[in-house]
Length: 253
Image (cartoon, rainbow, N blue to C red):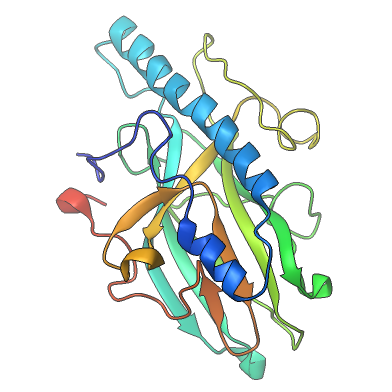
């Protein structure tokens, strides 16, 4: 049973979060449209190809149509804020990785979810290190648990000045049929990161939209982070929404 029933198949739904740009502008920061637009462009190129590949496999293998799931989006399902050691705010957000069918990711097809950051403003010395293969001090990414979930932890960790930045997620290392080919992601699997072999997919982020008073959810290509000692804001929203994530359609995760 699918967790989602409204998967946008063309990769063009709600990709730009106006609330993010408004949030940055209100803080005196200039939204970096270049990286956002280039990420959206490749997402729009790749998204339809995933559904074509899904259909080709299902038509050729009707007895086993789900053998090769394709990672498609991360769905916010948990959001808490704490003040751990040192009284520096930390925000823990749990995401569910879903495939093109809207199913929670299954562990029989291993996958790694990595992230990239784009600096926006504030103290560059406060920029966190991304969890991807370019950072030797990281795990290189997250491996979803048996239920398809992983948790990302946001914090300055030490007493530093605030910083604004953008976050992007992408998936790699999963199994695909021999015919599967998609465009490369600039700066990811175009040779920029030698550890990345095979296809990589930019992931949409399904989360609450601050522009609609936290009532609606949308699929976005990126999210904006603000790290400070006292709180962590995501797309302008400083406190975890209640309920923290998007409504669970069909309640199947």
